[in-house]
Image (cartoon, rainbow, N blue to C red):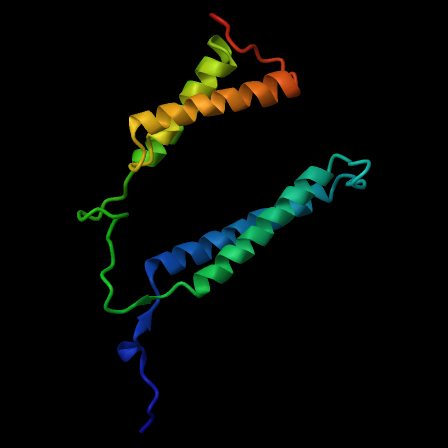
Length: 173
């Protein structure tokens, strides 16, 4: 009789998080390689004189690399078999938590509307504030401080340094 443990008596089992991370990493590799392939259809140029395909190839390669890292780290992320498995993102009822998704979608819609009718500062504040509320660990005060800080960063980087042609404040588009 063999002394090797069978899969039923194994102290470690594959967790749902392992599968999610593994498949998520694989998806990132596929999308990254597709971006590299699409970017190679254009002239890539050199680092000194970049062509139109340089950026998609670079971003696609980075995406594929990060996907490989995520998939590799998922292989080492195993949980004990007797550890309780959470049904739905920390909720006892097993339903997925849609708060983050809803806040990100609403923040993006607010950015689109306020970017056109309110300017860069109100749009940036709205997307950061609303999206930050999607994380249950953030308070309203933390979301407010983060949104103000990002408005300052956006004004310095996009309006002052890059001189983006989006006004800081406007009324009515």
